[in-house]
Image (tube, rainbow, N blue to C red):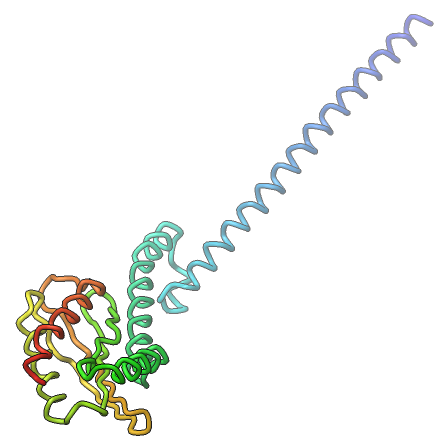
Length: 221
């Protein structure tokens, strides 16, 4: 009788231990499955967000697969980059065509100081600002104290002629002239575009302009 009870207790212990082991395995599987569901949900949410950023109609967005979403995003990113560059370019053009810059006025003050000593500093290449690879804005300051209208027109004509015959082949897109009579300053802004596959070097172009000015200014005195 005692022997029988011992066997029963042993069997019960084995069953209990086995049940505990099974519960642990089941719990691990449940946790794993829950974690996997959360991961898949996060991934799907990210793809849904990416899909919402693409230029696709709301109706088609629901039908686009994950591979198609990734492919569309890869193609769309360069388009966005080009659009950003276009807007930056447009912003720069607006800024430079709106009004004379503070730097231009400061450089004009330098002209006036030098003009007290000499009358040969009536023109100055104020700034050369490159807009992208193909366009440039050149600002030229002249002092009305020592410069006649005919002389100024002659100078600008020679500047444009020189740029048009440059190896880069510049073409004038727009030109504006602003006269500040109270300050004795005329600011000429030239907006140019380069032809062909050439790219504009701002510093090099400014050096060329300054050198050109030194060479032709004497003929206009």
